[in-house]
Structure formats: structure tokens, C-alpha cells
Image (cartoon, rainbow, N blue to C red):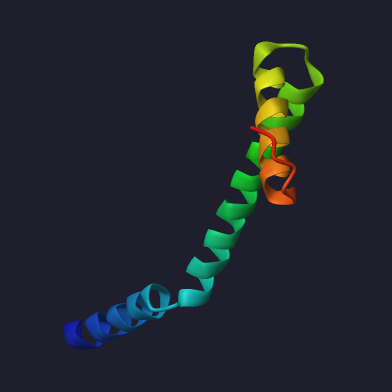
Length: 73
């Protein structure tokens, strides 16, 4: 009886541990939340006339100029 219970518990455990779909979905959700958090931080910093907002805007302008070949430094 104990062996039968152990085999059933082990099969249930293995089913959840070996299920990669759930782990992959969780990773995508976490990545989406990180992207949203970064976008929210940028949006809150850009709207203000603070040094953080000015720094974010200037760094974004520099990156865009480098991509577009604008020669900005």
C-alpha cells in the first residue's frame, strides 16, 4: 500500500516538475511585467521637468541618433 501511494505521489510530482509549458508562460509574464515597469518609469520621468526626466530624454535622443546615423554624441 505504501509503495502504491509513493508511486502515485511521485507521478504527480513528476508531472508538475516536468511541465515546461507553465514555466515558459511564467517567464513571458515576468518579462512583460518588466517591460511595463520600465515603460512606466520612463513615462513618469519624461513628463516631469526633473533631472531624471531630462536625463532619460537626452539618453533616448542619443540612442536614436546613433541608430539613425545622426552623428549625435
